Amino acid sequence: MVPLLSIVIGLVFGAIIMLVFGYNPIEGYKALLTGALGNPFNIGQTIRAATPLIFTGLGFAVAYTAGFFNIGLAGQALAGWLVSVWIGISLPDSPGWLVLPLAILGGTIAGALWAGIAGVLKAFFDTSEVIVTIMLNYVAIYISDHIIRNVITDRGDATPFVGENASLRLQWLTDLTNGSTIHGGIFLALIFAVLVSILLQRTTVGFELRSVGFNKHAANYAGMNAKRNIILAMLLSGGLAGLGGVMNGLGEFRNVFLTNGVAPAIGFDGLAVALLGGLNPIGIIFASLLFGGLKTGGTIMPLMAGVPSEIVDIATAAIIFFVGANYVITYFMDRREKSKLSNTEVIVQGGDE
Image (cartoon, rainbow, N blue to C red; front, side):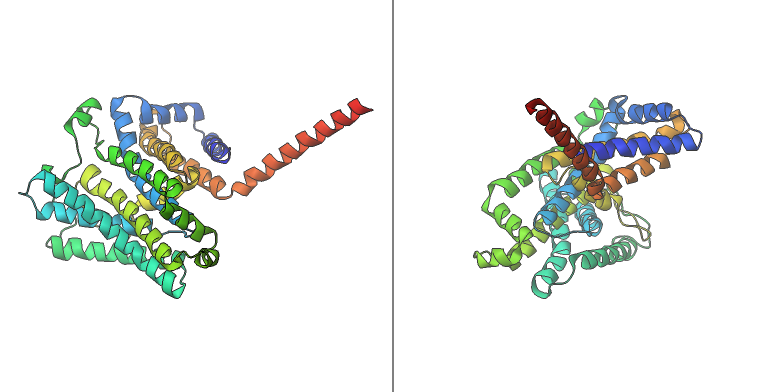
């Protein structure tokens, strides 16, 4: 109920903002819905926007399950994005069956290693993974810009585009959605959502990660290697975030460009998606589609209804706020439940009398 009520409250809050500034919320949300799902092209764009969020959301969920708050998803995604494109453009004449898997694997490893830095520091020095991953975001941003400007290109603002041998685009998907930028990464995202669900709920590794998340000292006492599991959790989290970056690098943009000091939005959006999805891989899929629809539909609102797209950002922020501050919703839900129980007791007592 908390995620559902958060969505409703967020949309109502957005409607109130529209009314305050003289916009028609019905027309605004009608345009939003049309922009997200109104035709095959928009549906394709919504799925495309959701694809990297599934990966970054899964990455956050894995780390959180093990008791860590991975704020470095953006930097890890950027590392995966950069490396996957770098591999793709470095092998322009090699066959696709070699280049594409190699680029995907390279991006995954890059994200995993970047998160692994925080994992090692946490495991052996008990540093705060929040502070370390935040700082690593900035390191990733400036290293990425340096490599793009001075290594891959000659003072350029963006790398060349990867060839067809390193692209996730599938022509039949593009044709099916009337020329949208949807790509085959959505199938990988769905597969990984299932794999992560199995890993966390049906394997010994998942049990140990959850145990460390509950209490690493108790896990150690039970014979589990807490340090190893801390590092493993961050490696898995970073690898999934790196895959989110790969989706941008080989799927949507097919190149990588200067960040200008701004981390990729898919990192922080992935955190919000994971919380909205209740840290459940299946819930993360639906939350990602919601965020993808909000982003895609938000670009249509100014054209169809004259409503600024920033309204969508406000509604999204409200959704995230109430998911994060879920105690506000649960407080009123608990009060309502207690009121119902009290009324029931009064009725029962009255009947006994």
